[in-house]
Image 1 (cartoon, rainbow, N blue to C red):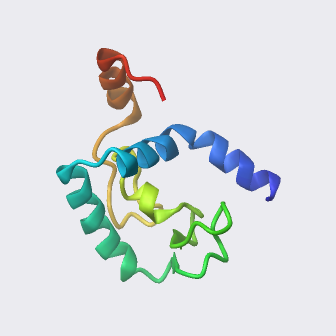
Image 2: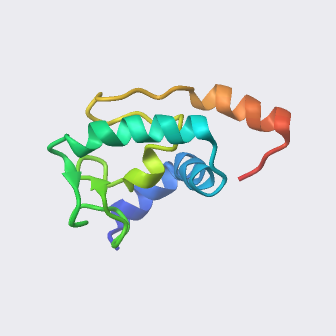
Length: 106
């Protein structure tokens, strides 16, 4: 794995962990958001279903612009599409406040 990939992953670790958490501990509302986002991604010319541009090998489908695993990115409510096809639904500051109030650490 390239150093630049590791740096990108490190810089986005909170969003990645949010997507993983929302993939494991599912809720109907997050799944509906993810489904809507994935329907947009599936029509996007930047979707990589073979995994050639994924930051982490074997995590396709991913976005060829950012390299993110779409299963996790579409479930990260604080993430936005790098091509402005869908927006973040919360900012990181608000998300941090919610986590703090709930005593969640991840």
